[in-house]
Amino acid sequence: MPSTRITEADGSAGHGAAAARPWFRRMRWRGYGPLLGLVLLCVVGTALNPDFATWDNWVNVLARTSFIGIIAIGMCFVIVTGGIDLSVGSMAALIAGGEILLMNSLATSLGSPVAVIALGMVFAIVLGGLFGIAHGLLITRGRIEPFIVTLGTLGIFRALLTWLADGGVITLDGMLSDSYGPVYYATPLGLQVPVWVFAATAFAGAVLLNRTTFGRYVKAIGSNEQVARYAAVDVGQVKLLAYGLLGACVGIATLLYVPRLGSASPTTGLLWELEAIAAVIIGGTSFRGGSGSIAGTVTGAILLSVIGNVLDLTSIISVYLNAAVQGVVIIVVALLQRRRT
Image (cartoon, rainbow, N blue to C red):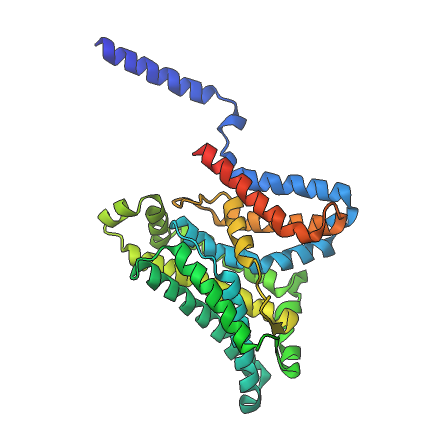
């Protein structure tokens, strides 16, 4: 029939045209873009200052990336579901303060610094998970928008820490600080402990997102929550687990951060939420949810740290403008995503 022949011809021509496109036009630029941007930035950084390409500098960059990177991995799950968490920086500050107070109080009764530190680390992860689950309950059961819930807890967490610190600083006991130090400063195989934890968290996150039923449900909810409900997905439970996972990631990042300074103050974790969200979005995750990549998130986190490192080494602009640069990057990437959509 004529209509059939026309359709087949058109389909064949369309398929042939797609196959004839150059390979560089068929590449998934959304996936490779962050990596190419990181490579280009490294080339520019090396050209501006040769010290940028040294091993010591790269170890420093990776160590600084670890805290935000771990949080960004948890944030990726939340954003893929179509949610957001603006409170992670304040949450980290409160967890750090609570962990230090707990360890200081246990130091005299337990006696063993190792046992005290182990309990403090478990406390940080559990408390972070509970905070995340509380967010999930308010969002799913309370039917409040994630933006509103986490904007509220952002202020609550920061205010509670300020109250506990009496407006000052909560400091870890000196003996405990010496025993806790290796959790941050030890360098097995030439890399600091937070870098190895970051790598392990990234691997586990990638497996969870791409190779499990939970990961498929996370993407399905972000793509179309109503359709996911029709497909018998327990949307509330999946969101609850996603926010709980993010809270646990904040706890892990915090327990690695505490031995670095040995203290917590109202400025601890300031703007961490901006950096974590920026890392996820720069990594190619859609801000509307439905798709995301742990590898891209890791690349985005490293890219942000490299930007700050290049600014520190070259003094092109003031280091006080780092947050402004990150904000501009978020807006530009969001605009590109909108045009692509």
